[in-house]
Amino acid sequence: MIEHYLGISAALGAALFFSLSRILVRLGLREGYVNQAHYTSVLLNNIFLWPAAAIYTYMCGQTPSVMSLAVFLAAGIFATGLGRLLTFTTLRTMTATESTPFVSVSPLFASIIAVALLGETATPRIIVGTVLVVGGLLGVSNLKEHVFRLSILTGLMASFFYSLGEALRKYGTTLTPNPPAGAALGALAALAFLPFYRSNASNHITRNKFFFMSGISTSAALLLVFVAYALTPLVIAVPLINTSPLFTIVLSLLIARKTENFKLQVIAGCLTVMLGILLIVM
Image: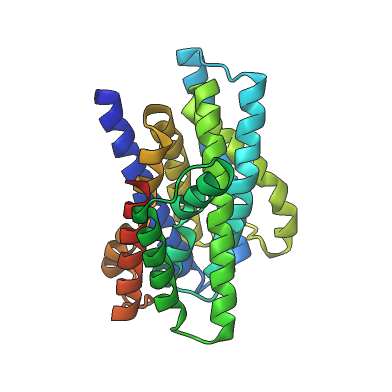
């Protein structure tokens, strides 16, 4: 029972740090580029997570199997690599508050996959939840013109890749319960994307303090994600991790109120998406 509550706490902590990272990236864009944010974040993830993985493996003796290594690397390609890349790309034209619903619908994709490929039934609750999610997304998408809608597609693609990565992460933790190793291997896979952004990378990793702090925040979030998956069923951990829209709204009010969009339409869209997600995964 204690492990269950620790897993829930880890999932909520991951949501908090992911939200904080998104806001910090948005603040950093006033003096830098999205590519710099991605570059800095991936480097810092590897700097912080690999020592944590080495210490945990040495102290607990949980050496990852060959199969779990492959699974963790694949999860990193989808989530830490493609998912994060598309998330940062979305932040070019959206505020953190606006972009949050579109990169937080992984449970919706998971439900669609379950119905289409696993033969699960689309219950009335799932149908209602899906309608609410789509309605919330449409509510926010009407804020700007066509270019804004292209960013919405990018955000949804990010969520899809995250959903694939989450499933692989959970599977990897069942093979080898070593959360720091899973997070570190995911960060290692994301290094493959760095050559595409080197031209815009900062020469000094601390030049943009917001990107630097965002990298630390995502490192903590990734570690907590794997802790949550090691201790809690996926159907519980994923929706809790995807409560990040609520944290984003609160944190934005506290530290980024001058740059964020707090129109009633945005807030209502975020809350509607959250309600739909809760109905789907309950």
